[in-house]
Amino acid sequence: MVLNIGLLGLGTVGTGVVEIINERKDAIKKSTGKSINIKRVMVNNLNKKRDIDISEISLTEDFEDILNDTEIDVIVEVTGDLESSYKYIIEGLNAGKHVVTANKAVVSKYLGEFSSLAAEKNLAFLYEASVGGGIPVIKPLREQIELNEINKVQGILNGTCNYILTRMINEDKDYREVLKVAQELGYAEADPTADVEGHDTLRKLRILSTLGLQGKVTEEDILLYGIGSINSLDIKNIKKMDSTVKLIAEAKKFGDGFTAIVQPTIVKNNNYFANVNMAYNSVAFEGDHVGELKFYGPGAGKLPTANAVLNDVLDIGNNSYRKGNPLKDESLKNLNEEIKGKYYLRVSYINNETNGTLKELANQVLCEDEDMAIITNDMKLSKINSILSGLNLSKDRYFLAKIME
Ligand code: HSE
Image (cartoon, rainbow, N blue to C red; front, side, top):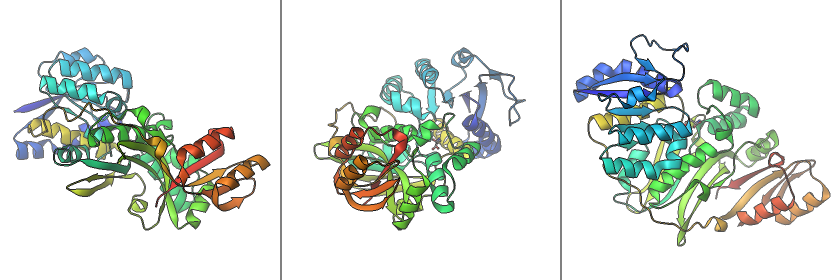
């Protein structure tokens, strides 16, 4: 039996998909009895020079060629584009084809719609590669929600940010220099703002928390702080605290509702997350029966991400994917207003007014020069935010990070 794939996109991940299939075709046939065949690939430009041999691949610039090909069983969507990928996924499912995607932006935005359409059509809509790169995390979470109430999902979900922060901390490298390397290594998004400002992490948290908390968690429900304004003084101060800094996403049940936030977080060097370095990711979730499960592995990059895509394809080929719509339509009460803790805050170009305001917040003053850094009292994040907006600071003038207890 042959499983025919229509591949949408031949960028970093699409190329990885072709490479792995070429290498593992025979082994897959031997162990599953099925041949995986890339029937056709949709690209933006037929004439573009590619890093892989495409002489045996049928290319097209027209999505209709894939949609109307009745022999294609599975659409593998690995474009980076949000609006056109939405159309491809909806039309693909409506045409009776299974869909696998690695596109976090489109999954985050339209997860509910895709999941219910796929369930209605008795088809698979799978998106393992959209969170945590090569780490299997969507499938295990999907399995655990059947037996557990998930109380918390937490993780380092962006390889680019983690790569930048690790090299800044360990090698005192400059932010711009390491971001450039992360782009060259194929970790960063086409527009790396999505990585460093935290949007990519937010989308992944939206996917994990919608599944995990079993209710409506929208992108707007998640508070977002990126790493874009971190500087060498912050790195110096954090190291003096025997700590490191990570961009951590967390959604958890809280009171009669939930909280959800993506924020730079200062963690002691002996904390589990401190040892998740470079482009590695880690996702933890806590079920009331199973307890806390932690997943660790490569969070970005061509082959790990393509591998996750192909795990989904094989689950379709083996008919071993979970059926039905795993999402619930229940409204959840957002209690982000209640988020509190101790925070590291550095503000640049201090004047007397700012100095006085920061001192009122401070449990400890780390330095007070032209740049001032403090550790705040244990307090509500909303209070810190209203003070910062009262000071009228532009985003690049301060860096705020939660101190993990
Ligand atoms: N730009 C993403 C990251 C790719 O750095 O994690 C993997 O989703």
